[in-house]
Length: 261
Image (cartoon, rainbow, N blue to C red; front, side):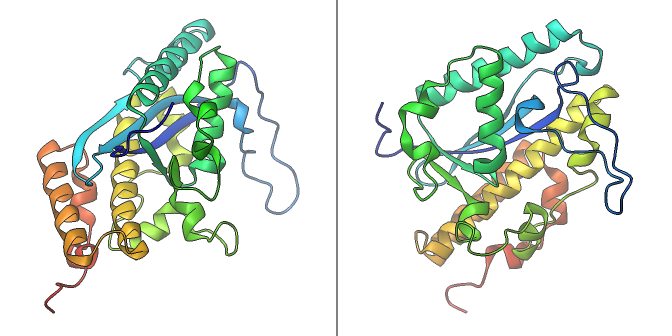
């Protein structure tokens, strides 16, 4: 199915916990640097939240939302956990298949999208848009999926930075309060809404980084970049869910110099 010529941009991020029903974490190794718990393989990540921010083709905010309800995930039975994740994936896949946006991620080519695909495989959820459109999976195309991490690392020519560091490079606060290593504990402790807000904070910062990258590419003139960034700041301030991001940023640095300066 062809993408509309004026496709929207869907900035997305996922939060996961280990699928303890199908994967058992091995004990940490005894050697130096092996004290941390091993990171699960891609197939063993149970998705608990998909956070999204939808921009229209002219880079104006249309919607910010999370896929996934606020159930107490930590107390669900294996069957209920599977049903919840299946419903989340069905809703997400249906939306992307119908809207046909260009996906925007940070490290989504290496993590978010493979995890989504493998978990859809697990739960028998069709993901036709992912396979029908080669641009979603093609590393060197931005027509279906623009992975900011991959592009800023020149597709492996240099070492990619984490979102936290690159966000701070352009005046954003980066990680606020918690990080990904705490997600599992928060979910198990019944604090899924905290994880959803954390996910939206990353999504919002990825959206600002996306606008800055379009400026870097020459796709947005400085004056238009400043206008769209300010408009997104204003819209998110009215929304209220990512107040910590807005409170912690360096607004003059994020907006960049005035074109008349």
